[in-house]
Image (cartoon, rainbow, N blue to C red; front, side, top):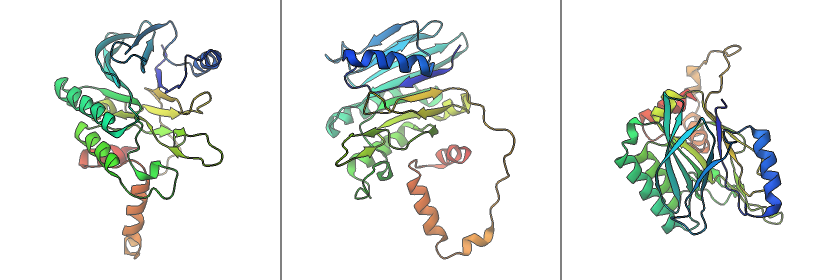
Amino acid sequence: MSNTGFFWNIRGINDPDKHKPFSNWLASSKALFGGWNFYSNHSSDPDGRIILIWKSPLAVNIIRETSQAITCEVLIGPLQKFTLTACYAANTSPERCDLLVELLDIQQQLSMDSTLWVVGGDFNQIIHFSEHSLPSVDCYDPPMIEFRDTLSQLGLFDLRFIGPLHTWSNKNPSFPIAKKLDHVLVNHPWISSYPHSQIFFLPPKISDNSPSLLTLAVDLPTSGIRPFKFFNYLTKHPLFLQSVLQGWDQAGSIAWDLAHLCVKLKK
């Protein structure tokens, strides 16, 4: 059985002109979904902003939904299961606060500290100013800080990924803007169970957003790796600390405590 899935914000998917390209992409990506079962949040939002699609033998049990998120339990065979929250955040900061409150409520009520949890989708918000293409965006603003602090409280962080940092663009040739609005976030129990999992951000094609393809088991290279070496004399360079801090900030993924630092170093 395939061990992949995807998150993708496809604006205007009801447009008939997008049906064939989407079907072709689905077949070429060999994503987990194929013999259609689906669930949407139409009961929470008239537009049904989120659709989950899966196939047997995968089993999905819906736990709760809102206008900005669907949370479910995913069972892969009799022994493997995890909790998935698919998100499509609102465009305004006050409405996005409702999503953050929902995630905090899920974390507390479902005891997610000890449960495998993956949260993915379009959050319409960057975590770090390096996730914005404009050089003028060079500091944290309140929505960034609120998002970052909430993720820290939830124990969620970006899963390692391959592909572009910026996952959304306005597709405006005269004034192009790109941001990382799409995130696939996981917790420490997830990393313990799927240490080789990773995300592939693919070309956006028919959408403004890049699809994020989640692969649960990616074999890491076992040969040809040189042992890490650190030369102590580097610390004596007058710009050493400044360079390290600058590189750390530009990485786009911030470690807020020692546990996060441990996972970051393993990447």
